[in-house]
Length: 174
Image 1: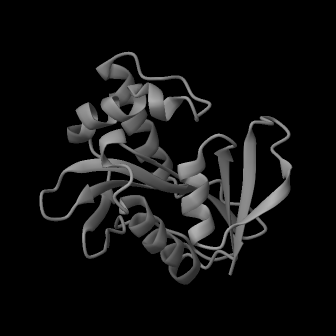
Image 2: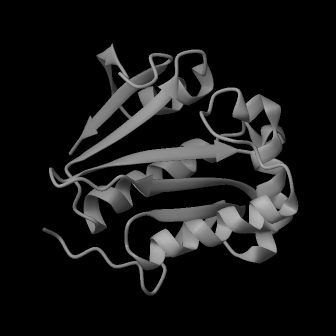
């Protein structure tokens, strides 16, 4: 088993983006993201109702990072430091795979931001964390997410998720 430690937290950078750790200073942006009905219609989660919900979410995420159970980045625009979304790797399995998840504030969608973020996170998952396979589950109506996965040669499974049949399963192997 590869030793996966997220201390210090790995900051990833691309030409336009900085992926950094979430902090409670991001609470308003996280609240905006987690209350957006357009985003939440594709996700099986309880929407944040209060700022306190967003703070609790940030604290919960950072606790899982401390335990090295997941890695979760805030996606920010490098030049302005503007928070635009999140991306994570989680569900680390014994068969050397993980799951990727991501979300982008609606007004920043369609600008190539997620493609750039996914690319650097895939590289980190395979090169640094030494995973052999990355899974992604996306709602069958979420064509934007499906398109991102297909750009990176994720392969759609013929099966759907048994617990939630509205989700398609995609896999990318090293």
